[in-house]
Amino acid sequence: MEKNNLEVLKQRYSEIQAKHNLPSFDELNKEFGIEKTEIEKFGILIREIRKYVADKLLNYLKFIETILNPSNASMVIFSIIKTLGTEEKQKLTEVYKKLAKTELDLIELDISFNEEKEAEFIKKGHILWKELSKDLMAIMTKVKENWDKESTRGRSSFVG
Image (cartoon, rainbow, N blue to C red; front, side, top):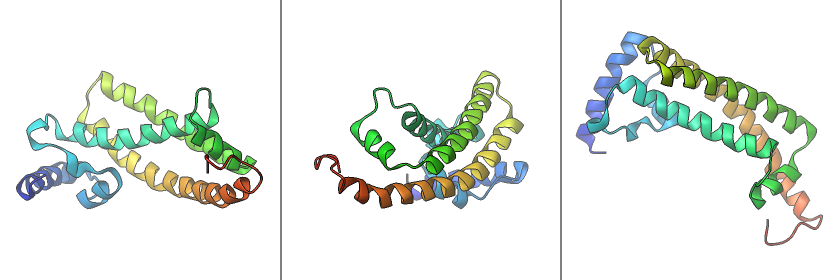
């Protein structure tokens, strides 16, 4: 995105930020990459910003769902599952439930546009991501620690 377009985006965002008490542009951009919003395709900017927040949350929902219910999962998912203990699986289930609730909120927003609800979703999604990312990072740290242990117990060399 050209600097000029980024400046326009930041200006437009600052208007809705002030109106709805949203997180800073830089905070949302750091977590959700909102700078990729194309000026020409703004439509309703708050909805476009919400979609970036939603996309990230839903991608992790699908990833966790695949781990918890791995039918037709890739080899890497099965390798990850082997590294998870009971505590990590329970934490993933908790994270999954929170993200699934978020998906229900998104369905409601897609059915009926409401600027206030869009803003509320952005705020809640930002807070939720900050919380869940810590849990996910702790789980991934444990997966990486156990990855090497698992590979020394005879996992195929081509998998990890």
